[in-house]
Every structure is written in structure tokens, then in C-alpha cells.
Length: 231
Image (cartoon, rainbow, N blue to C red; front, top):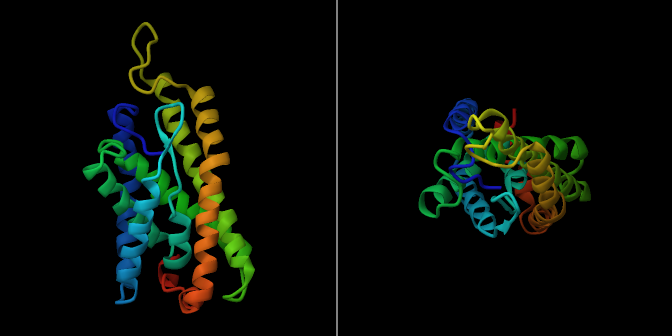
């Protein structure tokens, strides 16, 4: 799902930076309010976990990749605002040091995977797990369904960003200047890969991690250290 440079126009990249910037600012403010000695190492661990699982890329036909992200899991444990920062940090390290995702496209990648994904995933999780006790099976089920919804929402956003490029930016003869795939190609290609492969991987990772935390570290699931950054 990482968008490389050259597939989005500079103006599209600028717009996506502008859209993501208020979320980064808000996330920084919200996380600072509840920054504790417990949350700092957890945020670092989950950001590193997200970084690692995103490195396992599956190529898809339109030049991007499909992979798990772990953003919904981070949102469930730490809150969606903390997840925005954690996934953004992982994406920044990947873009700068590994060339996975473009520098110009960083704002778009963060909007898709660090904003849309955790907030959609957490909203679905919270709807399923409302008032459920901390050890309930509804938490891992809600996490699985929420993570599946979140990663596919992010994939749809990326597909739309790709698909509008040929419509908006092309030569006088109609040749696309950036991504050559229109909406009718980009959306099916991206969604097929994420509805089948990446979405399932995200579900397994999230549900498995939640079940593990419930058994080994129930205090984390019970206290929800990120509760203060969820609104």
C-alpha cells in the first residue's frame, strides 16, 4: 500500500500533506496529555511492531504493495491518536532509510495508513466491544473485524488517489503524467489484494495479539492506557 514517488502529482502530494498535518498536530497534543512512563515504551514497541510487519510486502499489479499494518491493534491498546503517531513514525523510517514509500507521497501514505486505518478500525472495534468485559472474546473478534475494515478503508483511499491521477494530470494527447491506472483499474486491483490477502493478514495479526495480551498482560487490556487519547 506504500505509494512511491512519481505515482501522485506534486499538487496531490501537497494536498495530502495539508490534510494529514492537522491530525499530526492533534495527535501530538492528545498524546502529550497522557504521556506516562508506561505509555512511552508501549508506543515505541507498537511502532516497531508496525514497522516490522509492514516490511513484508506483497506486490500488486498497479506498482504498489499489500501488507499488514497493525494500526488498529495500536489504536485498541493505545488509542487512535497514539496510533496516528506510531504508524507515522514507522512510515517515516521506512521512507527515509528503506525507500519504502516516497518522501513526497509521505503525507498520502500517512493519511491512508496512520489516520484512516486506525480510526476506522477502532470505531468498528468499539462498536462491537461496547461494555464488553476486559477478558471477553468480543475484544479479539472486534479487533479482527475492525482491522479488516480499517485496512480496506485505507486501501480504498489509496486506490482513489491513484485513480484520479489520469483524470487530472495528463498531456494534451491524453497520456497520463503520473499513475497510469484509472479508477476502474486502481480500485479493483487494490481492493482485491487487500480484501483477500492483506486484510486476512491484518485480522490474524490483530486478533492473535489481542488474545495474547488478554492472557499474558490482561492489565493492559483492562486499563486501556490510551483511554485518554481516544476522543
